Figure: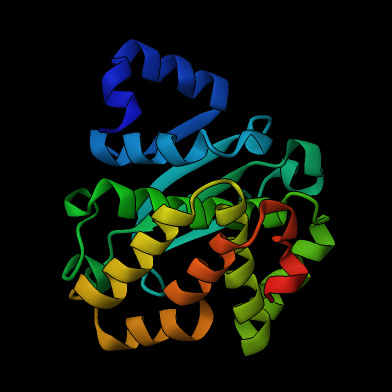
Length: 208
């Protein structure tokens, strides 16, 4: 059971304050709980505002980005958002509240892994990152694998593996989306190999 349900509403609100998290257009308690379950595993993000937002995004089901305001130019104060798409491209095949909790937590952990990758990047480096991600295949592969690795390093290996297996083997998502997961992300077998390594041996450079 998700920890937030056990803690009660008052405790959840208190945790939200400590984590500096906001929900926008996220009404499902289950989705909020899963996000908080993932976020509490990333204490490095405690000083940054994190926004979970639902909006119509046609290109992807979920994505993590910096918030483009005055804080964008100061790494220590930068805010980040994770957007969940409710675009018909995905809503037809997938409803987040119907996912197993472990799968949704793993999905969120991957997105928070992206945020970990962004933390030490300057504004200029973030701009270069965005250009590289959209225009260069190998760059995108590296970015997605890094996000997986950060999530695994934070203790979400089981959840990340569950997410991949669910998307590839159980979901009704279109084959083009599954093929994109195969191309860009760590495979379940690669995740299993990394889990078998001692924590001290698990580094970004070795896994890319």
